[in-house]
Image 1 (tube, rainbow, N blue to C red):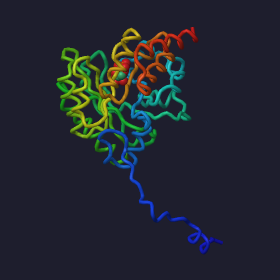
Image 2 (tube, protein in one colour):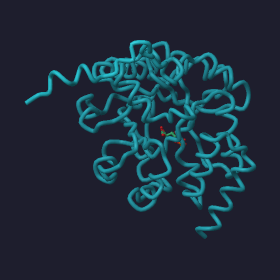
Image 3 (cartoon, rainbow, N blue to C red):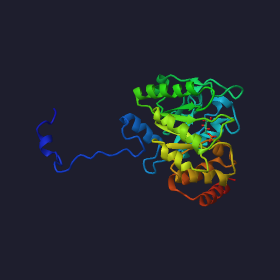
Image 4 (cartoon, rainbow, N blue to C red):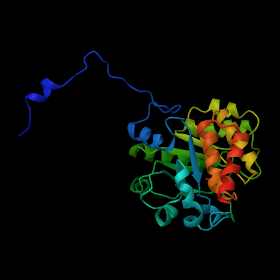
Length: 294
Ligand code: R5P
């Protein structure tokens, strides 16, 4: 029988303590619904406010590119060191163990290959499948200034609308056409358009000049892609400068999985992103860890 008499008398109601209301830690995200915030809080570490996303979605238009030939063999050992895996549903279902506790950012656009015009993408996943896969965010490629600019922006706004129904954030990925200038002016334009139209956070590229104006003018968090493989000190320096200049982390692929010591590299990147470790110290850390596994 329920104990209805004793419980209320015995409770301490703390009538002198006002209920607190905690502000959400991520830039521009305080007005989002609980599910959105909870998912973003699985991508971004609430302590550092940053994330190390491991990007392994390249196969959706590049096929089995260098380093991603065998995701089960080469990439799964990196999973413990990532905050988030960014990938396609094909790789998620076929290779990633469902026991993973890592947040998933699902690539939801596609339809093109490196053999053709890359900006001609469509939405390639139903929102119901994103729900079914329990993803923490969806990634949509946006080609501002590209041949299919309007279509890709509309892909993004449609995903934002659908994701909002289910509490799933949308990450816009600002893709740059081959012949376009990659500078702060362009990335201010591209990231701001994505944020104004509802993206919850944005992946863009780091530029050495005026990157802080890109992050300052964007009202939601920015993470940087790593881009082509660079020497380790350069990649660590880029990650360091990006977070010092306002990025909320990295969505890095090739500079990790194409490295000779990818487990050492992802740990060094983590230290830069989450602990503000200076790049020279992070390189020492990388060398130590790489030496241990050699
Ligand atoms: C490429 O199209 C994908 O969106 C990648 O997720 C993105 O470029 C990040 O990977 P990487 O660090 O290799 O540039």
